[in-house]
Structure formats: structure tokens, C-alpha cells
Image (cartoon, rainbow, N blue to C red; front, top):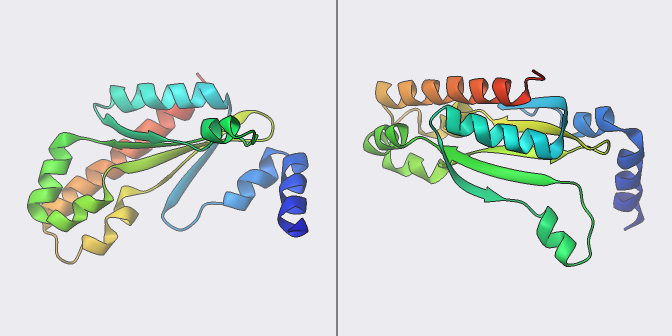
Length: 159
């Protein structure tokens, strides 16, 4: 039990660079550290999701519920988004692939209060359905990849 606690304490003291490197950028993921406050990044992400005409389908995070239990953990929010026209295309092509929707962004609070935005690329999420899908699935997934990159770029912009 001491090892996980010691690691958590070390990461908290080590600062955002080390904390971000623990997540790294796993295969198929995109990770965007920022200088924005966690709450600001979360608000900017939601605004960009709407600006790109995606629906915010789900939102969940352990931070507030943990606080109700007396636990203090960094902010962490998972935001599931999708666009209905792409959902219809995907479900018509490979109905089982819709188990992957909504595709999610994650906003994590770093020890210094800044936020990091991360997401698994839609092409990675839908890769298991590639063989049974047609060009329609490939086109929808390519559109999702482009849209997620645009949402992330705009949400993390320091402007």
C-alpha cells in the first residue's frame, strides 16, 4: 500500500511535466498539455464541441463524488461527444460499431492546476470494425478524426 501512496505523493510534488509523462501518449491517443486552468479548459472544450456541431452526449468524473466522500483528488472529467449524421452513417454501415459511441475526451487537472486534454483517436476507437465496414465507415471515421483534432486544437489554444 505504501508504494502507490509514495508514487502519488512523488507525482504531486514533481509537477505537471512528470504527471503528463505518466500518461504519455499511448498508441492511438492524442494528449495536449496546456497552461489553461482545468476549469477553463473544460469550459473551452464544451464550447468547441458545440461550435463543431457535435452533441455533448455524456459527462462523468469522479472528482465531485469523491469530494462528497471526503476524498480530495485532482479534477478529471470525461466528455462523450458525437454527431448524429455520422452516427447514422456508422450504424447503417456497421451497426455493432455504435457500441463505441460517444467517443470521449478527457480533461485532467495537473498538480499546478492546469489542464491536460486527451482523447483516443476515433480511427483507433473504430479500428476493430474496419474490415467489415465499407468506404462509408472509413469516411465517417476520417471526418471524426479531423473534427476531434480541430476541437482539441481550438480548445487548447492559448488565444
